[in-house]
Length: 249
Image (tube, rainbow, N blue to C red; front, side, top):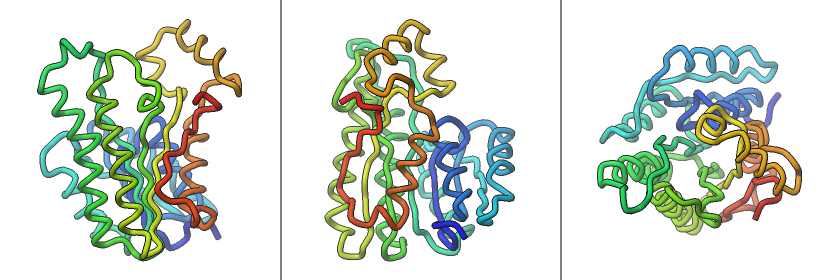
């Protein structure tokens, strides 16, 4: 028996990197997980296969819904209402991809897309959870170290994640009387295809040098923090912005 047996979970952005690690970790401990993806049905099927067959009996289902589209977050939560036997865990992980762009060159379309995926969809899934989540549930939002260590070229991203952190704090106060905890996790540099595809090797080596634990994070590292917050041991943590960075503050 896993700690999430009988629990229903939604994870946004579940086919790659941190999102995939979270889906597989929750399923490995018994949860039934619904996750969305924007493009690759093949990648989603691979996650479903990896999540199936564990000793705890968890499983995962992917649904193709691009959160950049208006109305998409509502469709995802409607699908959750149909697939899951109740909602216990919500993990907002999805984030819009974009090339770092100086503030002076950032157009409104880019800003709107990033805010829609990162902040608006998080607001809408949390609103749905506030209405339907079972008591003693868990909401975990994935933010970023960049809200405290901003990098140039990331104005819309940092703005959107700042909004996510404030939503986290407000929801923690509102939902606390029902035993629902709401927290945000801020990963540092995490070894994913996206990180390696957007950063040269020497930049990653520099990050490793300044990280007290002396390595890049792994998706499993972040998934372990999420699993702790989602489980019984997370019952006394709420309204927190937790840095999972290997020691970079």
